Length: 428
Image (tube, rainbow, N blue to C red; front, side, top):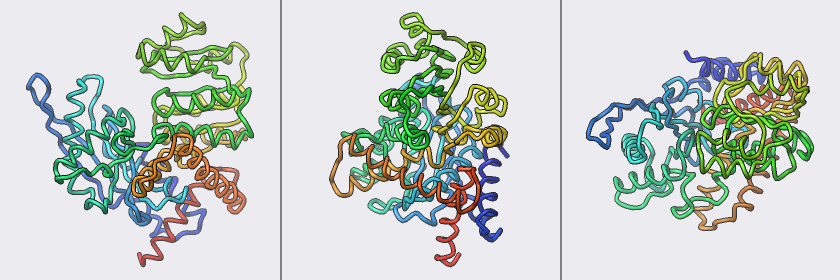
C-alpha cells in the first residue's frame, strides 16, 4: 500500500473515531465503491505503438446528487493506490464544503514530456473512450472529470469532443474545467489557487506584508501567487523542479514578471528571472538559504505534489517563525510534518478545505451551464470565496465541538460525519 493511501485511510478512521461513528460504517466510507483499470494502446506519430496503464476510482456516490467529481492527471508515477487515495480526498472535500457531489479521481501513467501534443491528445481520447460506459447517461452524468496534474482546459475539450463523437451529439457537460468557448466558466481555472490564498487571508486576518514561500508554480501555484501578490504579500522563495529548482529573493519576487518569463522560457524560467531581476536560482534548499540569511517566514503554500513536506522541512520552517500553512496540493504534508506544525502552534489549513475552490468552481460550472447564466471571473471567485468562508466557519466550530486545535482532524471528522449520516439515511 502506498504511503499516500495509508495516510488518507488513517485520516478517515481517526475522524470516524473522533466522531463516534460505528467502526463498520467507517470501513465502508474508507473503501472505494469501484476502481476501473485500463490499458491504453497509443499509436505514436512515427507509427509505433505503446501501452499506457490508466485508472479511474469512484470512491463514493452516497452524496452524489449531481454526480461524482474529480480530475484526471497524466504523470509517470500514477498508479492505482495514488488514484484511490486522491478519490478518497475528493469524497472528504466535497462533503466538507457542502456540495452535492461524490468523490472520484483518475490518471494515466505516462510522462507527458516524452510525448508530442498530438500524442497526448490521442491518449486523452483513448481514456475518454474507455471511460464512456462508466460516465452515466447524457443529461444524467454520474462521473464528471476535470483537469488535474498535466491536464488543462484543452484536454477537457478533447475529452468532451470524443464523448460527443461516441454519443452522436455535443456532450460538453461530461467534464468541467473546459475552455469558455465550450461552456467553461470564467474563473474556474484560477479558482483552486484563489481559494488557497483566500483561506490563508481568513486565517491570518490579511496578507499585506506577509512573507511567503511556495512549492509549485503550476496551475494552482501560479494563481495562488497572483492572488497573494495582489493582496500585498511578499514572495521570498518558490520551488518548482520543472522551472529550474528554486528561485530565492529575500527582497521579494516579482510575480507578474515571473509569470511572463515562465510562459516564454519554461524550464529555464528561474535562471532567466534571476539574471534579469536579481535573486538566486538553482537546485538548493531555500529553507537553508533563508535560515542562513536570518530570514523569517509567515506563510507557506505547498502547491506541488503529495507527501513532499517532511518533518525535517516543517521543523526548519517553524524555526523561521512560520505561522500559517495553506495546502494547495493534495496530501502535501506528511504525518511527521503535521505533528511539527501542530506542536508549534502553526495554523495548517488542510487540503480538503484549502484547495476545495477547484471543485467549488467546477460545481458552479455545472450549475451555471444548466441555467445558461455565465458570470464574470470576479463573480465566480467571489462565489467560491463565499463557499469556502462558510466551510471555514464550520471547521472552526468543529474544532470547538471536538475540542481539538487540529483543523485537519476537525475538518475530516466533519466531512466523515456528513457522509456517515447520508449512509444511514439511505439505509446502508
